Image (cartoon, rainbow, N blue to C red; front, side):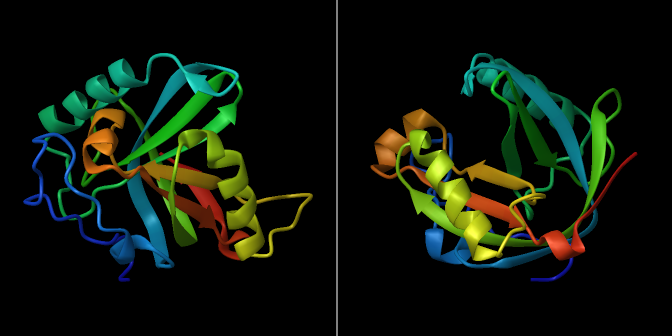
Length: 177
């Protein structure tokens, strides 16, 4: 993968007119290399890791990105992680700054692994991702999940694919603008 690129999404394979069909082989076991990759950061409220306002936050964020002309259809990626049992953090890849939104620049090398199953397995997936990069247990790297389809589309396709993304701790460097 070239710097700041992610595997391609085929937007034309979209029988639901919502989320395109996900191709897991394109995303599984890949290396992503980010150097000041630009993201909009949004947060959701949760109760014991169950998001309460994800739909509203995602809709508002996607609208702001689209209105600013900052969407990047060649590099579709939303990385999510639980910052705490009460708050989720979501990074939306964008092509340029979005006025009025919290912008983050992310640098580092990342590994991906595709999982299939219900979201309640995220704890086990996180453990597998950390093992895959021999993470320091005292200072583990950030682990993100890219939920490839909404729940409605996952039911339609009969598969709930989730891409785990773990930062290679040895090259981790994060900054905000």
